[in-house]
Length: 240
Image 1: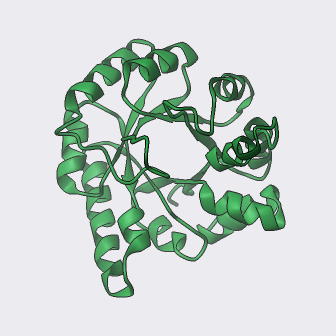
Image 2 (image 1 turned 30 degrees about the horizontal axis):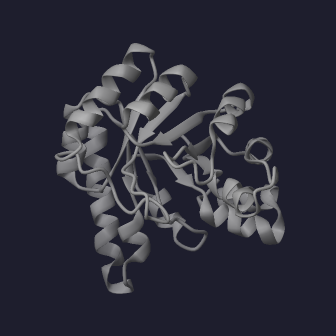
């Protein structure tokens, strides 16, 4: 029997609520513990250069308290790499980052960002932190990631999420093709971005996808039904 797909909960939007009023609550550290108690297999947090939601304090405490997997998303900048080398999370996922964007808008451009990515992978490798690359679901991007020597990739699911009904099957095929290429190259393949309760099952069913990173949908539902229920509902939606 194939291993059950893992759910990593991105807790950034809990911090967004906190920062909206400049209070000390809701605390993303507490949220992470509740997600784990509800069955989440990992916690994902994006530390942006402008600290618009998660902050250094959050990651330092999460490093001490997360009992599953702590995945730090970040840009491949010297400041962020230095922080990650000190923190030593379980995984670092390198993502593109623009100050004006609301959320990450696409995968890494590995042609343009190759030197920065190579430096980050080398530095993190020296402290035994595995690196994942957040990439568009293309065979070329997967091959480039493998060529950079990373053990993991996360496929950007935004095009699938935003596709018209007529395009949805084509986008799923792209995700499946990129996943198959990654598995063939020995990579751990995750997927995420914009996944929600109604659309997640089709991605979870792609052979070879072993992990989903989901945040906004879970936190949004938690406002209505609570975080424990929201996580358990998502586990149900992905077939757990």
